[in-house]
Image (cartoon, rainbow, N blue to C red):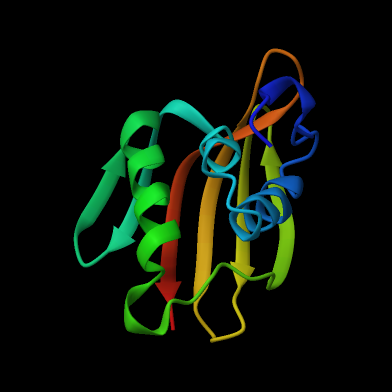
Length: 125
């Protein structure tokens, strides 16, 4: 999958996690990156942040090579909480199988699709 025009868009904020996991498992770094706004920020933990699509793309590319440390863990589907939507913003959250909880802020785009603007991989263990 390299052609953005053939990728399924997130028509609901709840679609974003499913699309991210599916694209990561397929090795589609471009598709993963496309789920974020141009100035999005990801909190990857321990005070480290990835800001902007170029940096997010580089981060996801590195993850494809190294995984998450020695265990080379891949993204996986978790228990998604219903999105909390307020106007053009949505708060999404997932409890992962390892017990960690992610939280994200998505924004509705002018075409009605959704992209993440803030992503925090772990807010609780």
